[in-house]
Image (cartoon, rainbow, N blue to C red):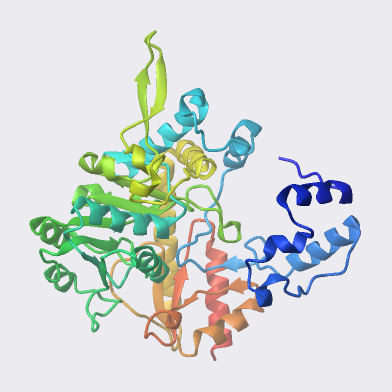
Length: 449
């Protein structure tokens, strides 16, 4: 797409067709106080000056090329093999858009089919789509899907308080116009030692779904069999949000009763990218596929018996009869899904397990070392994957400010979302080596004594 400026004569001709005298009349419907705000912009500059200014602004960013990052909380610094960027940077993928006449886009459809197949294998589910904007919107879509599976008669979505706070906020935003009650556990539930039995006891006949995260926001792992049994006994669905890297090592949610499995696909070869774009993966059991938002690609044969790919199974209302649609998802995040496919294909089952093992063992080494520091202590005895919580002797924001002086990006301050003062959520992935963990430990000792 190109943008060609018009000259004054052409602008006047267009205004004449519209019956207007001035461009400003195009904006008469906007209240005057908002119509032409003063913008604090840089003065006009030559291209060279613009590039220098942008470069200077970029130097204000903290990145994992210059800092050691122990910050997770939903976006993770995993290694991205060069093959991922090589494939996704090819013009036939990089410039492709959502195919509105899909059958002529066999290459795009095949790549989506491969992605869906890998997500199903990873999660233990029957079908997957491609895909949602991120993990948070995937969770919101899962709640709405469960609401419609229950034919709008079940109005309660029970969400564990250990689910990512931003995911829960997104669910509330998405469902605010629907007759859905969002229940986030009991007020006295300990987020660092969740009572799974108490959560299961909250399921009733009005529950459309129970939403849990495993590993949860704090990196902890739970057995959810009791919650799955309670949900199914009441006719509700179990929705599980899972870190896809963890599924290289731990039991897939489909094996312990999940009906819908969602999550953030960012760890699968996307990198941090200063916050996006990401992709939300979404998979479910086959009996619910007709209520699943997004696109589903199937494999078939044409009239000559040759293999081909088509959009299939999902209701047409999701795409062409928007007034009857149950979702506003209109993208398939195809380029991000392709990156995930290339990553999973390059790593394979053995490679993904090895990455998960590295995350697990490095995080446990870091937890042992940090937890042994004077004034620090592990905040929970629950099993964990690559993130863990420590109680700190000082406010987390003060510690993090001093860590930056040592080129370390510290952990997440949990007081932002929970009544957990002086609690830090630390993350360790396969990109962190032992020397860097030891550097963190030594610096923490220095800045807190």
